[in-house]
Amino acid sequence: MPNTYWIIFSQNKLCIFQHQDQYHLPDSIEEFDLQEYTENAVLLHQDDKHVIQLLDLQHAALETVDNEHQHRLVTLREVLLGSINLDFQHIARAWQYAQFLRTHQYCGQCGASTRQVQWEMACQCDVCQHRTYPRVSPCIIVAIHNGKQILLAQGNRHTQTQMYSTLAGFVESGESLEQAVHREVAEEVGVKLKNIQYFGSQPWPFPHSLMMGFTAEYAGGDIVVDGKEILHADWFDPEALPHIPPSISIARDLIDYTCEQLIQKS
Ligand SMILES: [Zn+2]
Image 1: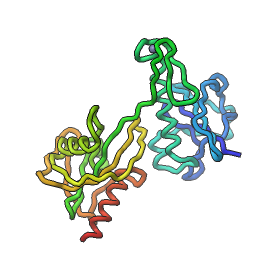
Image 2: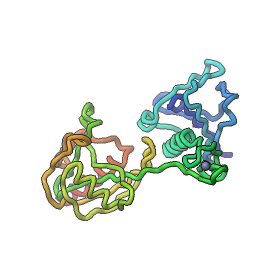
Image 3: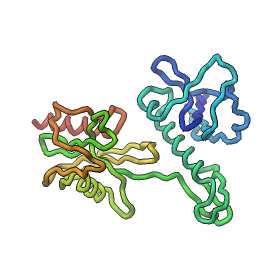
Image 4: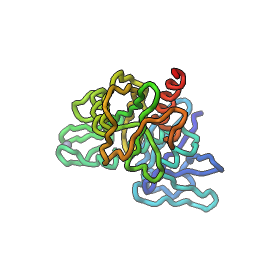
């Protein structure tokens, strides 16, 4: 028998039960007062091991029937940093699907109400036949090295934590991934690149990105930060890194991989 998990969002947070450092998703909704919402439940996934149901209460509060099992509401970022009894990817997907359903209740072409398609993740307008799918926004993320050191930058969102990371940015319409790598790096830190190599990818639900990772070699130019998105950037020895992102992120995988390569070569 597959295990059932309920992914319940309430007030933009995820409902969990916590036992020490472990998070658990509810395996039923009996302990909640959810009768008026159950028809909004969406079967998100089903295989031999898991049945995953999504219930998005949007701004409504989540009420328990009794006080015996007290749930908590946590942000997706908290879930990412803790451990949970379900792959984070399922939760990320649920979050993106919930966002999609909220923002596609009406047709973008003719304004009529849409309906949810049962057999694929889509909303259909039966008036003009326009069909929409959840948005995925491709982003490039790149680790740059010069043979000895890695280039890391501090973004304007990370001044408090003093965190340094790889460079990243959204792919623009009509642009190849490689062009996006060259453009973002030129805009943010002003250097030129060569030998761009694909590394791997990671879906990132903040809000609906697909991070596509690359490594690249420095090909010239001095570091000149844009002063808006990037406040400071520098070359770092692999043995003397600043504060870097946690290991759940592709940014960290890229940094670890690049530094390993640099240490092996030296
Ligand atoms: Zn329409």
